[in-house]
Length: 86
Image 1 (tube, helix red, strand yellow):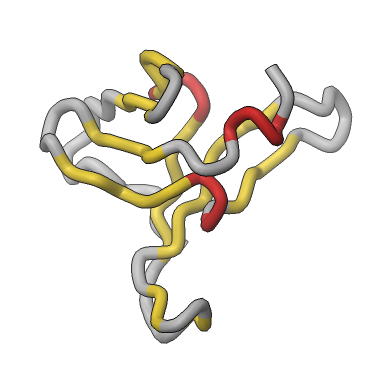
Image 2: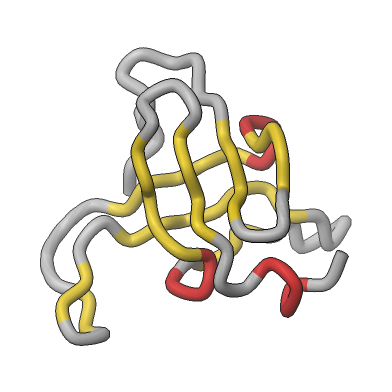
């Protein structure tokens, strides 16, 4: 799958039934040695395209359960669910 095919998909937390963002607004953390995606970094607050003060949500790749036509479903087992905020 190409990155361009992921763009525009909604990221949904299966456990909380919560929309986290759209992948086009999301950064990727990539392992520089292997080129594999390590995590999605989702900004929590956007206002007219400009990022305001807030934390980012880091979703490790292994939490992704399904990539569908319109959305990416994640399942995070940690409590709190997004402990790796930046």
